[in-house]
Length: 386
Image (tube, rainbow, N blue to C red; front, side):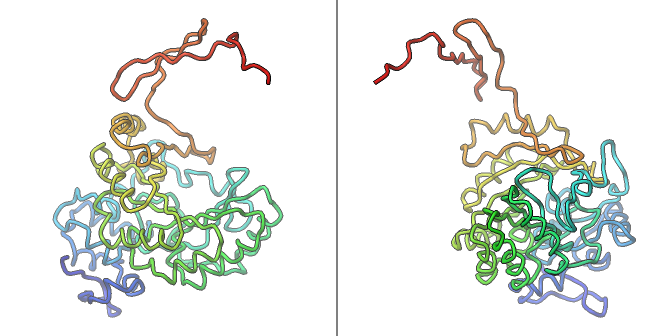
C-alpha cells in the first residue's frame, strides 16, 4: 500500500504511521479533512479541487480515513473509490428532481431523532458523524453538522415514543454512522432498545466495515450483542472495497452471531454495469454477507452526476438474473421521494395473461424464452374429504 498522508495538529502534512492502519481511533484522528491533506495524497483535478473548496466553505464536509484513501487510485479521477469520497464541483449543481430531504424524513419525524415512515418500524438517528463522508449521502443536509453523538437524555423522548407504540417492532439505528461512537455509548443505546419488550430486533446501519474495518473489534461485537437480536446493515458498492481487512471485519461480525446485510447504492461510473455488480455480489456472499438491496440512488441535492437513470438498474438486474445465484441477487429498490416508501422494481418478466380457461400467464425466462404457466382449473375435482 502506498504511503498515507494526513494533516497533523499543526495543520501541516505528516506521514501516517503503521498504527494508523490497525487502530480505528488513529484512523479517525488522521482522516483527511482539508484540501492540503488531500492534495498531498492524490493528484486532484480542477473539478475536484473546486469541489473540495466548496465542501470546506459550508458544503457537505470532507473526511476520508487513511485506510479508505489507500484504496483510491491517486492518478485516475475515474477511480470508483475516488468518485465515492472526493468532492466534485458538480455538487454545487441542483439537478432535475434533486431534493434536500429526498426521503421526507423531516416530515415523518415523530419524536426528536426518531423517524417513522412505516407502521412497524422506525429510524433512530443517534449521531451525525462518519469516518468517511460519502458524496451520495442521503442525509447530507444534516450529517457532519457538528452535533456529534446524541446522549441518552437527548434520545429519551424517542425511547418513550417507542414504549408507547408497541406496533413498532423494528428499529434501524443510524445517523451519521453509529459505529464511530464508543463501545459504551453504543451499548447504552442498544440497552435502552433491548428494554422495550415490543422491539423484536434492531438493525444498525454502518459503513465502517467498508471505510473503517479496524473498528469491527471483538469488544464492539459484544457491545452490539447488548440487544438480543442485532443485524448489521452496510454499504459495499464496489469489489475493490472487499479487501482482506473488510472481509475479516464481516467474518468477525458473523462469528459473533450478527448477520450482515448489504445495500449497494447504484452509482454512475462506479458500479453501473453487470460485470462489476456480479463480482461484488459473489464476493459478498463469500464474505458471509447477504446482498439485500441494490438501491436506486436517492435524488439528493447536488448528486445528479452520480445518479443513474432508473432503466440502468432494471437492465442490469435482467442481465444478472439467471447468471447469479438467488442468494447473491438483491432486490432492486427505489425509495420513493417524499417518504412514500420503498418500491421493488425489475425487468418485465410477464409478457401476457389470458383469462380464458385455463388461465395462462406467459413468462420470459432469463434466456429470453417464452413459457406458458397454467393456473389450476377451479372446476377440477377437489381432494376427497377423509
